[in-house]
Picture 1 (cartoon, rainbow, N blue to C red):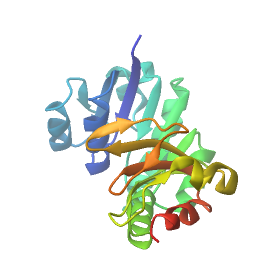
Picture 2: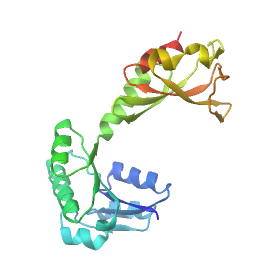
Picture 3: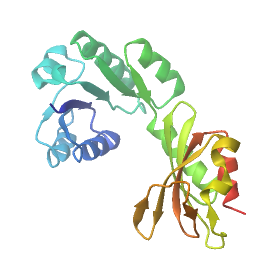
Picture 4: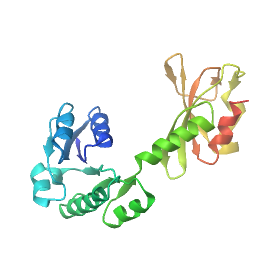
Length: 222
């Protein structure tokens, strides 16, 4: 059975979520009280409703109480939106939705949203800024993903002047507790093993603790 995901709030972030989830094997319900936003989402998915998410009866009528996971995607650039997020989370809990992820644009807001019932909180603004900072500060970082807590994956390009090196010589696991998960070479994805050799212009995905990964990345900047 497909997981059912509910997205509440169809600003840019919510619409991006609709687009991303539409490519996955899930069912989607999306709601917003703005007709134009609902119209944009309806170009991607069919189950989209104009709905005031602070109205429990309207929420119930939309079918949102049947979702496995609801995402409250309001930005908090206005105080009214924070209030809407809080009331929406409370209503979702009352309707029996067990998994609720809420957007929080400020650290203080994250605490509030968890207190009223959000099971998880994401900060799209923080994620974006951290990715930019890592890409700029670490030079050859293509992208960055936080997996959980302080464990990250960095996607990096190996410079063209890098000397081909057997993966075992780097000894990343024992020195830094890090692992190379994948190697992309000539548009092919390779799963590394003890015989793998890293080559110039390879793109690699490295997993490890946030504090250790800059040291690992610096090996490829020499």
